[in-house]
Length: 156
Image 1: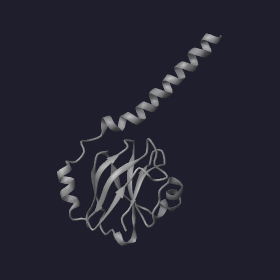
Image 2: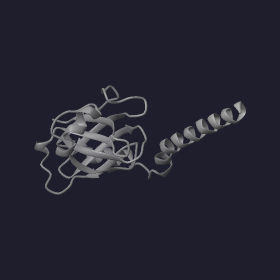
Image 3: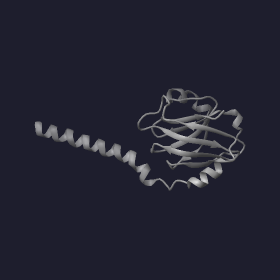
Image 4: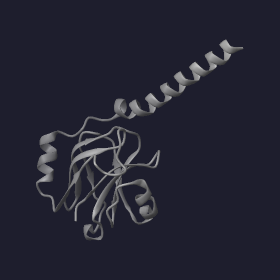
């Protein structure tokens, strides 16, 4: 009886660990190649606004973080830096600075979802037509699948 309980427990732990590793590693293994650093730098040169991403935010932790620079041009948002890998990342524009999911979730309905983030070492996203950046002051990287705050940067 003890042996069956022990085997069930250890196999359950291994199964849970394997699932967790799969959730973490699958986005890394399936991610497309990140944009070239020179191209990112060139696109960022025409930025109207920029913001620094840091790991020092209240909502950031060992598995949920971002660092580098976000640059906003008239037509694109460019990230030069790194993000913690994860599934289903989205980039949002919000009208006020947030640094944790408990601050983002109440204003998520006011946020503009810009697009999906598929790479973790820099990205370029097109701004939707007609976006007025003066209505927003912060970019937020959000994990939609787990409702997890990743990082944010205030650009105005």
